Amino acid sequence: MPELPEVEITRRGIEPHLVGSIITGVRVSERRLRWLIPRDLAARITGRRIAQVARRGKYLLIDCGANASAGWLIVHLGMSGSLRILERTTEPQRHDHFDLLLGERLLRLRDPRRFGAVLWETGDIARHRLLADLGAEPLEDEFTGKLLHLATRLRKTPIKLLLMNSSIVVGVGNIYANESLFHARIDPRTPAARLSLARCETLVAAVKLTLVRALKAGGSSLRNFVHSDGSSGYFQQQYAVYGRAGQPCRICATPVRSLRQGQRSTFFCAKCQR
DNA sequence: AAAAGGCCCTGGTCGC
DNA sequence: TGCGACCAGGGCCTTT
Image (cartoon, rainbow, N blue to C red):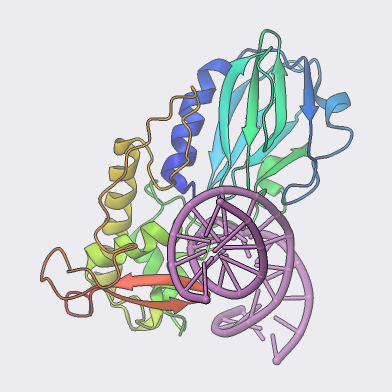
C-alpha cells in the first residue's frame, strides 16, 4: 500500500506536470471510491489553474486556486491507488476511475480496491474534517521524542497501534510501523505509557530513518505501485521483519514472530525487541 | 476520552 | 483447471 514515502514520491512525480496547467475537465468512470466523487466536480473545477501540489499525511492536495477563489482537489490513494500523467488520448482501462484533464495530457487515478478518494474542498483546507485532526508530519522537525512521549502518557495501547494512529503521527502504516519498532528494538506490544523519553527519542529517530530510506529507495511498499510517469520500476525493499514470520532475525537469527494487533499483522523479533 | 471492532474492496494464494 | 475460502490493508466510523 502506498505509505507516506510512496505518496510523497507520487507528489514529486506529478507536481511538475500539474503546476501552471489549466484544468480542461474531468472524466469519471466510477464514482464509488471510499466516498463518492462529487457529482458537480467538473463544473467546479474546469477552467481553474493549478498553483501547487501539497501533501498532508497521505492526502495529496492539489491547489486549484491559482486564477480563482480557493479550491482544492483532495486525493487519497487508499491502499492500491496510483497516479500517472498520460497523453489525453490514452484509453482508460479496468480500475481507471478518474481523470483530471489537462489539455493534451491528463492525470489518471487507478485504484483496484477503491479505498482511495477524490474530494473537493473550497475554503481553508487545513480545516477540512479529514485534515483538521491529523497529528505530526513524521519527517518534519515537529515530530520529536518529546512529542511522542507526551502523546503516550496514560495510554495503555500497544506502542505499535499508537504509532499507526494518525492523530498522533501521520503516514506510518503497517509496514513501516513494524520496521521502525524493529530498528528501535522496541517490542510492539509495549504499553505506550511504559516508554521512557529516551526510548521515545530512539523510536522517533527510527521512524524518520525508515521513512527516509524508503523515500530514497523510490517507494516500494506495494507490488503494483506505479510511479507517476508510468514506469513500473518498483524496487522490492529488503524488510527487516515485515512479512518474514518464521524466518531468522537478520541480527540474531531467532525466528521472527507474528501476531495480530488491531486486526493488522505484526512482525517482530522477541529477542531483539524488548 | 480511549479502546476495540466493523467495514469498504479486489486480487492473490491456497486447499480441495 | 476451477472454485470457494480466506487474507491483506488505510483509516474513518460506530460501538463499548
